[in-house]
Length: 448
Ligand SMILES: [Zn+2]
Image (tube, rainbow, N blue to C red; front, side):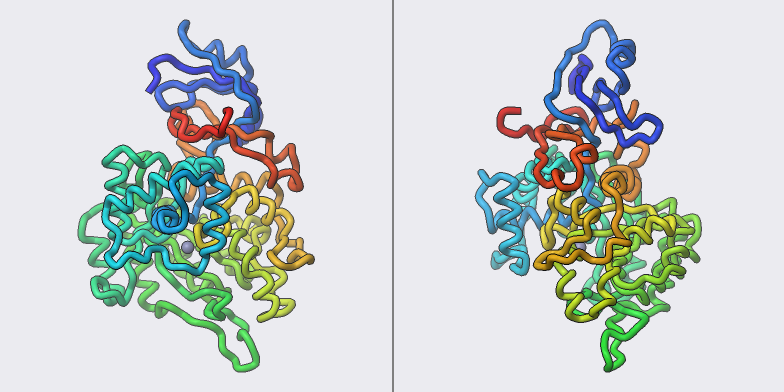
């Protein structure tokens, strides 16, 4: 870490509601020393400092609130060569959506897991990311993250959501999951600024395109309503345990009936929901207004992915007709008082934040000319907040990340232009030129 502070001169979109724009900021010892106009920032600096003029616009580092980064690393090591750039990686992941993460005869070793992270972190940094929430971390993946951190190789701030699969040999039922969670005495929030335990991950229903989302109205004339993955009573017991023992909960709930179950139990969990950032994950098919309001009233995070509807929009129209039009109701979730955290579900879905913010605003879907019902669109400002302040909140880090603000961590990215000023049509053509995590450059584009 630099002993001497650095003064950076560049227009800044801070995402701080108290001061949305600035013309300079200073960094010292990994944190923001000051931000404001040039004279203000200079006044906060000691006699000795360095000055750097930046070509572009500075934004807080983005946080993908739902990225399977370690699996993206293992998958990357099978599909790309180490000299790949981010565009090449995006293409390779798009080509191999349905392929296995790992085809080795043996499970990946710790070295292979760390090597995968070495491969993909700079690629995600090249998209302006400085943090992620990994939404389903198995014990082997947890070992991988811990080992990468131990070796000083975790450059992406990572919130790991423990996933203990109900019905697997180690955790055959929900009581076994509870026993495992209770076993070590740690809980959500344990860790440091680089690697921290998030809420646990649990599944309430299945996937929409497979017709497994649990809906209130049947999928079709047969009366089939979808698949519930955990009985009501088990789910209630798990949430109650977590609420009483310092654990957050992130529940995969796609269909309205599954989301209603989640909202009901979160409402019962009370203050624990805001404290440990309980999430509705996906939440995109026919949640009722009352359900969203109930979830919003206790401070639930709506962890939503524009990518999923981008890929599934046409398929859902084929299955559900008109009912698909309001899918992924981001506008309604925000209006219901939920905290919107945006993510991708990469590498299994598109994960380029420029593309996903564009989708959230335009409601376009792949292979169709007509966008989905625009009444559920959000603004570009809201989309950017979903990737910064909202995702920082979901990461238990709203006091340290998601804004360029005095005393916060110096996590920032230099963009070729301000995404909001550039406008939604230009958004996808913008480039990230440099990304810093904790005041250290972790990515520089050629020439930057
Ligand atoms: Zn996922």
